[in-house]
Amino acid sequence: MKGSALAVEGVTLTAGARRLADDVSLTAGPGEVVGVIGPNGSGKSSLLRCVYRILRPAAGSVRVDGADTWELPVRQVARTLAAMVQDAATDVDLAVREVVAMGRAPHKRLLDGDTADDRRLVDTSLADADALHLADRAFDRLSGGERQRVLVARALAQQPSLLVLDEPTNHLDIRHQLEILGLLRRLPATVLVALHDLNLAAAFCDRLYVLHDGRVVTSGPPAGVLTPALLREVYGVEAEVAVHPRTGAPQVTFLPGGLPAGQGSDQPAS
Image (cartoon, rainbow, N blue to C red; front, side):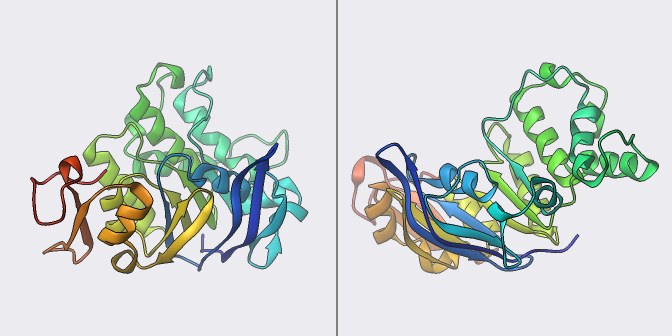
């Protein structure tokens, strides 16, 4: 598994008369972890749905290794790109191991059974997501956090060169948030991930794109993007941004009640 190059070029997405994304462009180089951040309704999920071929763009293109994904056969795209979405079905009457094995489907013919290699990859993916102990449990009986880890495992089992994740840390406790993002950081695949938690985005992403009202406001390394002025403009909050003493990553602290920087108590960003 190696990383693919992703290029979103001038993408506009519409729903009736409403624009969900307006002339959005972004890139992710092979092996990069690129974060998409912004407030609710900014267009993050819509943009990701376009990348993994759920929402067709009204204008622009999505290219993976130079090929327009909307012009490729679905099966070919599925061998390259895996997605983990927020609105995945949770009432699946399957064991966890069977759910994760679905990630192998793009690499097999319709009636092919699981091979020894498939089973090994499923177990490895479950272990990487700290979910191997759930393998024989019913998927629809799991907690939200357990399901989230299983869905990450399914995406890993697909062995994509491009992994697209919409809020993968939802429902996860702090330990598993750090483990999952650390795992994504170590993968050779290219990762495009939407995150709400700005400190996690700062710690694990190579570059960030900030969306607001469907447009890219700014982009770049976290230290250049996460500024008090940007947070005030996009999120409508006052914040202080410091350098973490151990990691060197930006560390955002929101200030209560809209206090100007330098006053108030510590409240970590989320």
